[in-house]
Image (cartoon, chains in turn purple, orange, yellow, red):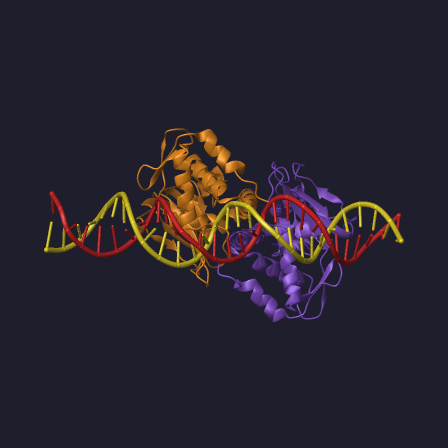
Length: 222
Length: 222
DNA sequence: CGCCATTTTGAGTTGTGTCAACCACCGTGG
DNA sequence: CCACGGTGGTTGACACAACTCAAAATGGCG
C-alpha cells in the first residue's frame, strides 16, 4: 500500500542532506513526474497526499499507491519512471537526486545495506499487497483501506474525522473495484453504524473493532 | 513473476565466490527453507524449478513465485524468511550466505548499487504483478502465465513442448483462481486450437499469436 | 438559484467460486 | 498381467459477488 512505509531514519537523513532548503512546495494536481520521464530523483513527502497512477493501453487504470508524509516516491523505477505521480492536495516534497544517493553510498557503504533492507521491506509488502488484492472481497479491501488511511494519518480511533482526499474513482482503481462497488460498500458500512460519511472528503470511524472485523474475512474467499 | 529476473553478471559472480563447489543438489519436494526460518542465505537456481509459497492463518495460500534457472530466491526477507520454498523438480542451487554479501558490499561499494538496481527491478515487477492479479480476467491470467513459462524456458514459439511442472492447484494459487477455473480455461484454449495438452506436465503452443491475444484483453474488465 | 461533477441507488447480467460427480493416469500388490 | 486404489484433473449445475448500464440524488460552486 505504501510506497515506502519502512523509510529508516538514516534514509531520511540522507535525503535531507541531499536536498536544498525546506523542500519543494506544490499545489493540488501538480504532476511530480509522468511515466516515461527520466527517473533521476527521489521524492519524500513532507506534507500533502500524492497519487501514483499507471494507465494501460486499453484504458485500464491502476492507482499504484497513495503517498502520505514520510513516504518516499521514485524508488523502484529503472531509467524512466514507470507511472505518473501527482498531488491530490497542496503539499511539500523533499527532493533528492539519484546521483546524490549513489555518491552517499560510495562514501558510506553501510548506507547501501540500509537501503537494501528498505527495498527488501518494500518487496515483502508488495508480496502482501498482491495477495490481498488477489484474494480479498470488496468489503475486506474497502474496510482495510479505510483502516490504513486512519492509521497513516494518526487517527486510528473512534469518532475522529479522517480526511479522504481521493475520489471514489481513485479508491476503486486502487483496490481493483468499480466506483459503484466502492460506494455501495461504504454505504453498507454507514448503515451498519460502523462508519459515518459527513460530506465529501471525510469519514469517521464509529466502531473500530467492527471495522477491523470487516477487514478480516467477512465472506469466505476460496 | 520472477523472484529475480534481473540478476546481473556481477551478482552471480559474487554468488560463485561465496559458494562452495558446483552448488547444492536437491531432489523434488526438497524444502530450501520454511517461513520463519532464519533468513541467512540467497539461493540462485542453477537447474530445476522451485516454488515459493505463503500460507495464511485462514488457510488461504498464495504461490508467490515460481523460480527458474537464473532466478534468485531469498532476497526480500528480513531476519526470517517470509514464505516457504521447495523444489518442484530435482535441481541444483547456488547458495550464498547473507554475511558474505554484506562483506562483499563493504569491499566493493558499487556492488551495493547493483543489488539496489536489482531490488528496484523486483519492486517494479511486483507492481506489475499486483496490477495483473487485480485487473485481469481468468483467461488473461492463464494465457499470460503460459506465455511466461514458454518465455522463461526458451520455447516461446509454435509446436514446441513446454514443461508444466506445477499442478493445477499451484497455478490456481499463483494466479488467484480456483483449480476448476484453471482447468476450464485450459480446456477452452485447447478446444479453440490455441494450445495442446499432451498428457500431464506439458503443454504445446499451437497458435502463439492467438495466445498472445488471449493474454491481452479478451473480455472487458472494468 | 442553477449548473455540473460526483456519488448513490436500482435493476439486470455475468464471470468465477462452490459443491459434487466423474474420469484418467499411475504405481502397487495380488 | 490385470484389478485396485489414490491422486490429480475435468466437467456439470448452481449460487453469488461484483460488474454494467441507467437514472436519480447530492454537494460544491459560481
